[in-house]
Image (cartoon, rainbow, N blue to C red; front, side):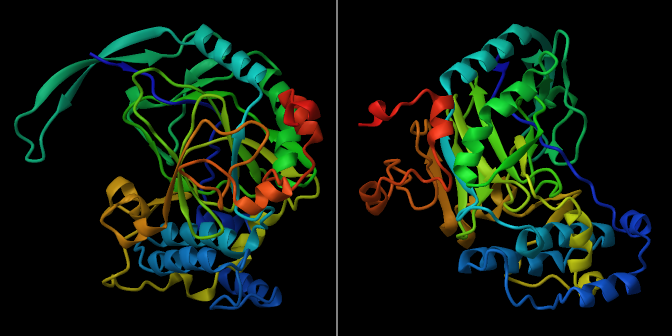
Length: 399
């Protein structure tokens, strides 16, 4: 009998389901009108550039475009085009790599852990049937699963980016009124330190406690609100198996990050496809109309279906997310037998305090490039002083 309490993190995925036909009606555009806007805005196909226009980013997205052209369902194909055009071109990037890893303030980690363990603690027993590949030799095992209790605690709603049966749906812990917003504002200097831009708090939903038998498909978030985002890893049970967050960066790497309690992963969540969830901020001058702009950027041939081709892996679009069903772990870069796994980089927390780990660091030793050390560069785009205040770091600490 096992207790099911895997990774616990501060965040929430906001799933945006895009239906092509409903959105066309909402915007009052026919396909002819949409294409007129496409040309008016100077879009062309094939794309002359991407944002950012790095070789690795172009390799990732060009492969995705080949895959999406072979998705049979028309609505799914259009939804995929929306997601990939946002990543490739329409959504801006604000950092060099699209992600960074650092250590959270200890006093905030402690507050969140106290909230977590005041809320969870009730378990119910379920019976689960396990069968071998042939469907024979099935056995029934008894397991315990944690259930939500108390005010502000519930099971996560059914959303298409999370594949889980009822007993495995994550538990949402919202906390007292204003508590999540207080943490969002308190952590804001750290996000501005990483991104180097002035931010406006957007969304902080609370703690999501993941349970066994669930997974979060690769997706990007809503561009109007989910721009500069973060995963605050609160805690995990002693018997939880390692379960990494997966994020693709602007250099073409697939980063598999094993977070430790108290780690914070920063990332650009409306640009970088990722497979697990967050606290959100948006730039002060961020364009709120970007979701409509994505529709204008989809090329005319989106509704032409191409036939399956050897060497192009099957893609299944699920709402605003996707999976590669013929690859291990539903993502070819996580399948060690696939050529895409050559772009996989694995990282293990805990992260260093007062510095930001990102692409270019040594993932085994968790040390920065030599030139960064020589220049005393901390990996961030912004000034560290306000972030250090939140962390409780003084100049004397660093001398």
